[in-house]
Amino acid sequence: MSQANLDPRSKRFLRIENVGMSFATKKGTFVALRDINLEVARGEFISLIGHSGCGKSTLLNLVAGLTTPTSGVLLLDDRELKGPGPERAVVFQNHSLLPWLTCMENVYLAVERVFGATENKAQLRERSLAALELVNLSHAKDKRPGEISGGMKQRVGIARALAMEPKMLLMDEPFGALDALTRAKLQDEMMKIVATTGSTVMMVTHDVDEAVLLSDRIVMLTNGPAATIGEVHQVPLLPIRERFRPRLEMAHDAGYLASREAVLEFLYHKQAHVEKDAA
Amino acid sequence: MNAATLPAAGSAAPSAPVLDPETQARMKAQAEAMARAQRLRLMTRFAAPVVGFAFFLLVWQAVAHSGDKQLPGPMMVLEAAIKLFSDPFYVNGPNDQGIGWNVLASLQRVAVGFGLAALVGIPLGFLIGRFAFFNQMLDPIISLLRPVSPLAWLPIGLMVFKAANPAAIWTIFICSIWPMVINTAVGVRQVPQDYLNVARVLNLSELTIIRKILFPAVLPYMLTGVRLAVGTAWLVIVAAEMLTGGQGIGFWLWDEWNNLNVAHILIAIFIIGGVGLLLEMLLVAVARRFDYS
Image (cartoon, rainbow over all chains, first blue to last red; front, side, top):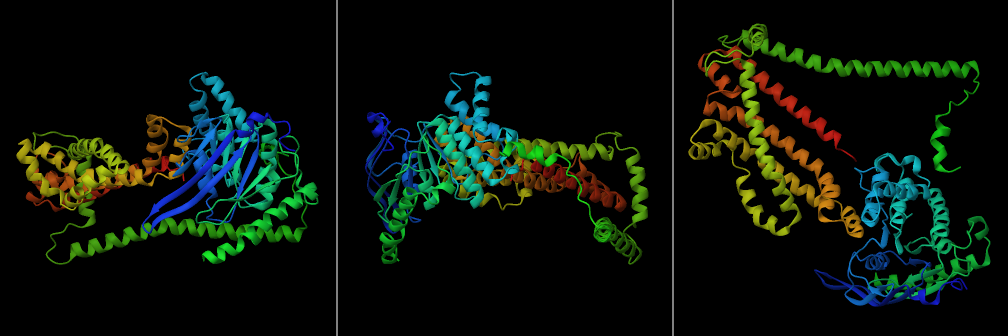
């Protein structure tokens, strides 16, 4: 099992208990999520997958604390989550770098917030540089976001999140806006980064291959409205923090292919007709 | 292999591939054709405004020669201008000073009135943009007062300050405050939610949010407001000075009308246009400095 070497106590690192989320609209109450129950272990890589509009980003935003659930409770490390905080770093889909700051300054802003009280400026700079080094971007540290490619911006976003040494890394379709080759490159980099840092990651994606390639478990959401967790699939491969998963090898790995089929089966067979009913 | 080594690899001089003479000749012909097209484009770019000015002067000359010949032609105005600009900074009493002093007096009024408007208008814009309550409170008043001609405020200024100069500054203040309030407010509302989400995830302090996120994000909108405000202020000061008298380019223009010196009126028109253009160019250059898109 992939969690064999984890401290059993840490299995309940993030707990989502009976969480529901509704929004008030002009037409009345819109139920986005209902009855979400999920436990994430320390060091685990979780993907949230589902058709668009199923509320997977809503769920991530709840964990991030950017929105508050209308029912239920979220706990991280046995503490209830109230509002956003730097211990849950977010990598946004559109990178969300501040365009008037250089890559270095963007990372530094986060580092200063987290470590500014205990470390001096040289140490903070050191940390920022190390984070950029981790995503192979030390050469672009003095460039502004407008001067670098989309893939590089996304890497700065990841560096900013990692530099905060968060308890949890939350990624909202982090590679969704990139071309296929850049995406593959960043996924490989992500595997190496997780192997180095041992981060606990929750990633929203709509890409089946990305979910299978990176995850320990894939959480599949039913179609909205009132979406909930349909299935949780355990990927029968060693976690990426223990062993790199080369994509060429994966192309004919039985465990990889079985996982891929399971997710596709869920998305296009079990959940496909619901969408027709809703339409 | 990794991206860090890429720029270095790109900057190394690539060895030129050997091409056959026919390809080389074709490439050379292509390069020449492109250079010709480029030269033509450059020439048109400089020639077009010259043609425009020549046409303008021709029409001016034609109008000056027709009718009762009250309007001086371009040559007469040029002669008068040379004489005028040879001594721009003389002082013969309060009502007879060089053209330079008059322009500076107007600019000073604009600077003071406009500066006060920025001091009040920009913070007000931040309040209106950030808090719905202030928006709902102030929007009807602003909508009502904004369309009023700035000169309508002049009598109020004269009544309150009992002097011409503060009244003129007051008029500048009231006309240049609206574009700054409105553009700043719009800018604050347009700050992308993503940036504010970053601030929330990082738990940034309100001061850091203002310093690192709100202010830089709003700055381009603010500068648009400043540009519109300075443009309006310069339009209004000329009109206001015609009414208040004393010193300034607007007063000077009206004074020359009383002297029936039409050549000087035309010079004043060109000066007003030129100064307005310079102010605009200056602010566009400042705005470009802060454009990160």
